[in-house]
Figure 1: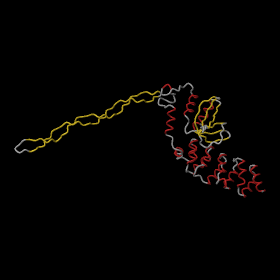
Figure 2: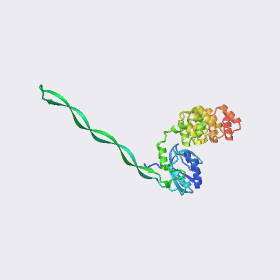
Figure 3: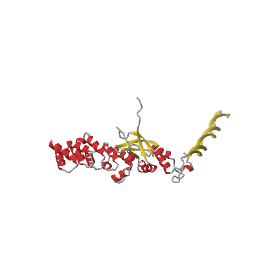
Length: 338
C-alpha cells in the first residue's frame, strides 16, 4: 500500500514587508492564514505542510495543523512559532547579520572526585602471651598492630567540559552576549510544552472570562475550548472574534443545551459552528434551537430555509408575518399553505 501524501498548502506573499506583517500578527500569535489555499475532506487538527513563498519564490516549509477551512483560505496553527519562520523573519529584517552557529569551546570545570587512599591506622589487638612465673598462668598483653584501613578522601580534579559559547560576531545588538540561538529557544519550548489544555487552563485563572480569553493565543484558545469546565469561559470563547475557535467549543463534552441555544443566537458565530448545531442529532431536532438559527441575521440563508420545516407552527406563523429575509419568509408562508 503506497504511503499517504501529506496535505500541502501554499502561503504566498507578494513582498518581504507583507510576510513580516503576517509574521508579527499571525505566526507570533500561534497561527497562519493561507489565503487562497483550498483543501477537501480535511479533519480538525490534521497535520499539513505549509510552503511559504515570497514574490513567487520558495522561502521556507514548515509543519502545522489545520484549524479551519473557508472559501477565503485555510487557517493553520502551530504549537509554537516555527524556528524556520523565525529565522527567515530575522534574516529578512537584517540581511547583513551573519548566521554563524555557536562554536563549542572547552572550558575546564572543577569536579570533585572521590579517590580511595590507604592510610595506616594503629589498632589495638589483644594477643595472649605465656609468661613463666611460679604458677604458669596465661596473661593477655595488649600489643599494637598496624592494620591498613581504606579511607575515602575527596580530591578536586579538573575535568574539561564542552560549553557552547555563542560567536560574538553573530549576535545582534538586541540579543546581547547572553542570548541563545533560535534553535535553543525552539528546543526549550518543546521540552517545556504542557499537556493539552494545561497551558490554556493556567493562563485562564486570573481576571474576567472575557479578559482571560482575549489574552490567549489561537492554540491556547482551542485547547481551552475543548477542555474548559467553566461555563463563563465557553460563552466568552463563543463571542470571540477568532471564529475558527467556535466549532471547538461545541465539541466540549461539558457544553449544555442552553449554551448551544445561546450560541445559535449570536450574530458573530461562524457559519461552520451554526451548521454543526443544525446537523447535531439532538440540537438540530430541538425547535427552540432551530428557531434561534433561523432568526439569526447572519446564519446562511440556505441553512435557515432548511430549518423552517423543523420549527413549531407558532414560530412559522410569526416568520410568515414578519419582515425578515425574503427566502426565509417565503419558506414559512409555503409551509403554512401546505
